Amino acid sequence: MKLYIDAYSSFRGKVDDINLKKELKQKYKLDTRRQDTFIHLAVYGAQRLKERVDIESCDELYITSGAGNIDVLQKTNNYVCEEKEFIKPFDFINMLGNTTSYYVATSLGLKDKNIFQISNKFTFINTLVSVYASLKNSKKNAIVGAIDLVTEPDEVIKRVLGVAQETSVTSSVTYQKFSLSKQNAIGEVEFDTQSYSLEEIQSQVHQSTYDIMASMRCKALDAVKDDEFFETMPSYYIAYAMETKKNILYVDCFDGVYKIIKIRSLV
Image (cartoon, rainbow, N blue to C red):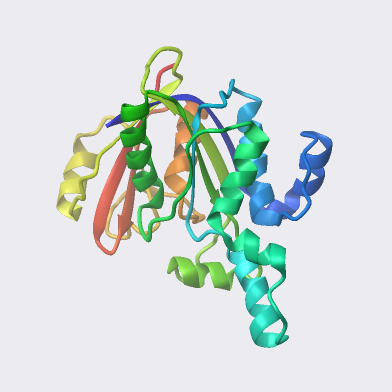
């Protein structure tokens, strides 16, 4: 399966380094009331994509995340379990994944399919499969967003993601506009539904002419790995490949099962 990349946007780092609420209000003239940091990050990434490419109201929207809006879940747990208070109405609303998708879609003027989905493993790759299947039927284009927000304290997100306490984690938001047409594309991403063993992955890595990057979870694989972790890292490496004009084979792993995506620059 192949999707063509028409445009991308990417932010990775500490959310505290930018004032998301101020940026959305002043630069993009958006109403940020009743929204929290996770939603602000999602909308911010979407607006950065909008600066790079024309977005049609009929484009489909897919949002995924490694853990979703953990920040609001922590706040709600504190209200109910610690302070013995009722859940605040907007915190309850913001817990719903569809709420994030709604605000992103509204900010982009999208009126078609709008899906928030999280898989318990390989969430970004599984989203690509869903996008490909839908576009084959609809013949439209798709906006795909991947949002991971590090909470404070970061031990909570580490427990949710199942990574070691000594692991460095970071926030990230990346977007791509995908189509099934190569015309005007700046890159392509190839993937499949197949799961691989370590031996099969090692064979692919040995034969590939692409630069090899791997998730921290690929402990048994001898490959270059990032020094920070977030669940939707394959999405970040799409942006990285486009920025550096490199071809990258990215390997992801979960419980000894491997999946890959191949990213190729076309410019």
